[in-house]
Figure 1 (spheres, helix red, strand yellow):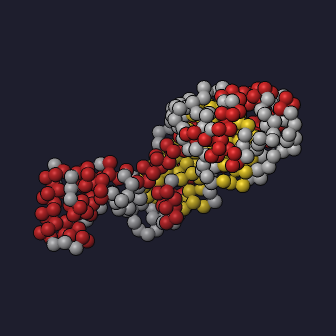
Figure 2 (tube, rainbow, N blue to C red):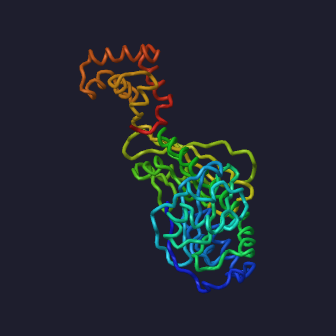
Figure 3 (cartoon, rainbow, N blue to C red):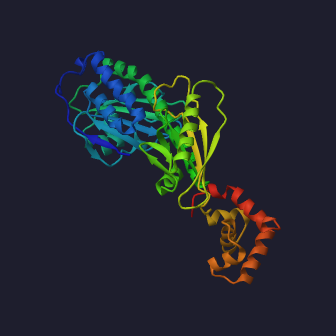
Amino acid sequence: MASTSQGTISPGIGTPSSRGTAAAEFGAEQLSELLGLVYESALQPENWTLALAAICRAFDAKYASLIVRPGANDQPGGLIVSAAAQRQVLDTSKPPLHLSPFNGLTPDRVVTVDDILSEADWRGSAYYRDWCASHDVFHVMAVDIQTREGSVHGLRITRAECAPRFSAADRARCEMLVPHLRRLLNLHLLLNQDREINRVYGQAMAHLMVGAIMLDGQGRVLECNAMARAIAEMNDGLAIQGGRLEAAFAAENRRLQRLVREALEDVGKSSLLRPAAAISVSRPSGKVSWGIVVQTVNPHRGTEGTHRPCVALFLRDTDSKASPPVRLAQELFHLTGAETMLAIQLANGLSMEEAAVALNIKRNTARAHLRSIFAKVGVRRQTELVRIFLNSVLLLGTAD
């Protein structure tokens, strides 16, 4: 992610430190703007720099930085997002955080350099000499914030040497921000965790050749995984038209839309899900028909609005060929590379003779491989082998 941004110092440099650089409390308009940017960052992480720039302006600072340190607060990490009050000139180098005197802070305790080191010790520290001095950073206010899951994030607000020291009023305003920043970080981590879980589930369903489509309260496509998107793009009996999934043949499309309407009517009526309904959709290509399962999704009771997941459609491309990772197949069944390739061809419906031709090997060689496969997998018939292969965890692995 990025690093330190350079900016300009606001007016008022050189005034006495006792004066401070802003009012003792946030104004209502300033606080509303600042917290709005802070909480928006939970939904859109790219807005972090905007929130940090607003913090810079609020404290008349040069930089504001968020340091992410997964784990305990005595384990310095390296992910830094920084911003300046005005200009956003990025510096891609990273500070030597392991030298920072702010490592190991007590969570939620706002401190300044003066609380930790004398001025002489600060000027003589390697962290100041090697990093801060070259970036015209002298005054530092710091706080570490620990999330529910134990990760630690450090907020650092800095000023140039010619600027006033951070005052007691600055410290009090920073302490007021800490609970909001903690909530933001917890929300951000929770949302990212949910996104990652959804991504993994979506990939697993795609590997199993299952298409998943989520519809909103109006029956429009809200989201679909890669397999469902590929099926719709084939335009072979199913397509997304005007934001809706439609069948090519009128009678089948009427039934599909009726099932969707019936599922939508049940949304929110009961905590019990409506039994899934199914429909077969013909393909103009003459290939095996699509099978679609229509399932109501009951959103949380507090969820309102039409743009929420209300109905799930599941479909599968029965003509697709299984392509499990060869490496995983070898590891799972202790097969050789040649044996694995033969087993995959058989699992995709080829006869032994067809598989031998596809792999460009002799029939006797294919038979020898098949006998070895049977012995290693523990089956006696080809149909058993196909069933075990297709029902194993192989299809959930990422392709080689």
